[in-house]
Image (cartoon, rainbow, N blue to C red):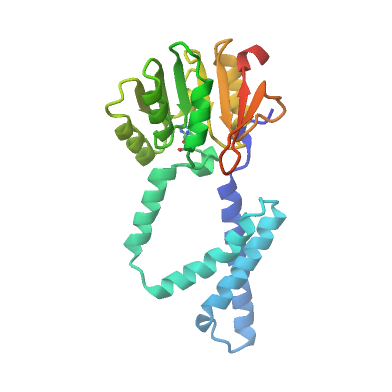
Length: 260
Ligand SMILES: C[S@@+](CC[C@H](N)C(=O)[O-])C[C@H]1O[C@@H](n2cnc3c(N)ncnc32)[C@H](O)[C@@H]1O
């Protein structure tokens, strides 16, 4: 199985494509500058479009996923357009810091922030054992799901781990006054899973193979792994459920320790 740690970092490829596009345009401008009297300073938007086109082609050549090409095409033209509006640079820094605190190292984890909806939370509630149990949400986001579960099942203990600082702070604040809910700041790869009856994940395709190895090695024999939307590649789930919500969310159920 491939380990998500060994997959190439997508940002490196994106940077390579952007720099490649910029280098090509600089070379073109330097070459044409010798031959023509065109003032390239007057056509920054056209140069930006050209840079974006070349970057998109490089990204295509690198076999980056399709959604990268419009990003490359639009990135530099957008930078040029926004520069002309004259927004103070501090706002860009503030927006960057805010995004970083909410999404943290999505480039590394390959897991962005999106939240479990109410209908899926209700379906998950039905999967909890009837007796008191321990549940963990790996990458608990804003803690909304856990808060709902913890309020519905005061006899069970719920835990969440989140590595994005601002998102984790929100989750911690939401857990206040809910004695059976604990939110910890940290990396869920460091969390031993042996003590939990149910492990819930809503991640992305990227970490699933590595998560399966961890869950198979650490989870108790009867413990249940529930994955929202993303299957473990190459492993047939023991059961799968379709939630009656707008996106027909699928929950994949595994008993990793029995299968590993
Ligand atoms: C798709 S969101 C799911 C949020 C929540 N579990 C829910 O279902 O509403 C995934 C979360 O996992 C977090 N995450 C990703 N990798 C992580 C890691 N290694 N350790 C802790 N949190 C992580 C992300 O920051 C993000 O908030």
